[in-house]
Every structure is written in C-alpha cells, then in structure tokens.
Length: 266
Image (cartoon, rainbow, N blue to C red; front, side, top):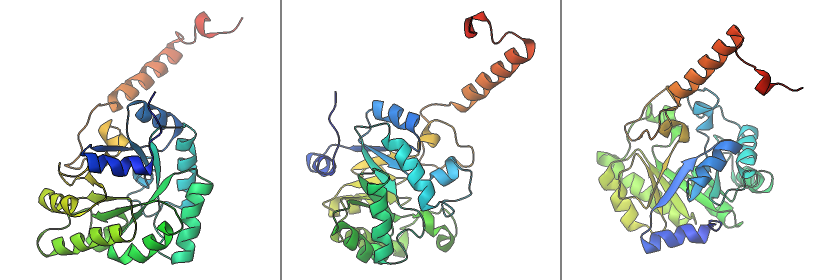
C-alpha cells in the first residue's frame, strides 16, 4: 500500500529527478480510479466547467460548484495530493476575499492545496495565502481564465512574451508557491523555466522537460468532443463504448429481454 503524498514529497521529487504525475478528477468514482492508477496528485480543475458542465470556457464556474467537486473527490480518500482549482474571481478581488475562499477549499472542501492562475500580477495574493500556511500551486503561460485577453486558447511565450512568462514563473516561486503549472508555452521556454526554478514545474502543452505533467481526465479517455488540443494523448476511447452500452440497454428494455429473473426479486 502506497503512502499518502504530501507537499514535501512533491518537492523532493524534483530534487531527486522523479517526474510528478497529475490528472484531473471531479467526482468520487473517477478520483478512486485515477488514484488506483498511481497518480501523485489529483487536480480538481475548474476545467469541470467545460468537460463536466458543458460551458464554453471556465469563467462561469463558481466557488460553490468547485467546493461540490472537491468534496466528492476527497470522499474517495485518495493517496494522491488533492489540489483545488480556484475559480475565476475567487482570488482576484483582494487578499481578504482570496484568503477566505482558499480557506474554504481546505476547511469545507478538504483539499490539501489550491491552484491559482496568474504570475506577477497575482504574486501578492499568493504570498498572502502561503503566509497563512495554505499551499499554493501557481499557473502561468496560457491561463484559461484570461481567455478573452489572449484572444482564445493560443500558445503563449513566443518572441517578446518569453521574458514576461519567465518573470511570472519566478514571481510565483518567490511568493511561496510549492509548484507551478506551465500551460501552452514553447518546449524550450518551459525547459528554461524548469532549470531556473527550485520548485517543480508541471507541464500541460509545455513539452517533456517539465518536472511533471497534468492532463484532463476526460481528454485522455476520449470523453470530450468539444476540442482536441495538440498536447493531449488519448489513452482510451470510452465514448463509443458508453454509447454502445446505452444502445444495448435501450434495445433490451424495448424488446423485453431486460430485466430477466436474474435481475428480479422473488
């Protein structure tokens, strides 16, 4: 039986050159399954707004919705570290509101860390939160909550943007984050950042040099048909299996072959 993964374990993995594995989960059964698969951390992402709730982006996701998902994942009692995504405007309204909301994720939700999008602009908020002993994972590069400013989900950090993202990653570390997600940036830039920082970098669309990787569970299982980013590798294609199971059920109920005596009480 593997032991519970903690923040010091994640930090040690970088020091020892061991890759950190992260997958998203938004509910109890999925959390149990990915944890059984051996992931080091489960990110309860605000990506739930897209792959779970059907929104076009993550902006509509609320604190109450995120708390619902976090609680469901925590009930699975995973050995993986549970990290809660802070939704849009949960931390952008000032330190007091940010501390309150991040505290709720740990106190009410049961999460063991939070993730906050933004670099230098969010560094003061991250510092205030980490000073209250709430572990923070940063997130720089392509930040989905900034989709309108970026003009869509576009690769960041090319040409003159590279230095800004380097500064953002350094600011997040200096503010006390224990790790930082690098999303949608050139692989060479991600390698520079990974070499520069003492904290682990977790890549998503940022190449192989990062200290770890994170992907959305619905993407790797073929359950999200809205988009298929270049950085996603599909490890299973469950959508046709689920559709076929539903089709067989409908057929058997219609023709009277289900339920049988085997599925009935005497």
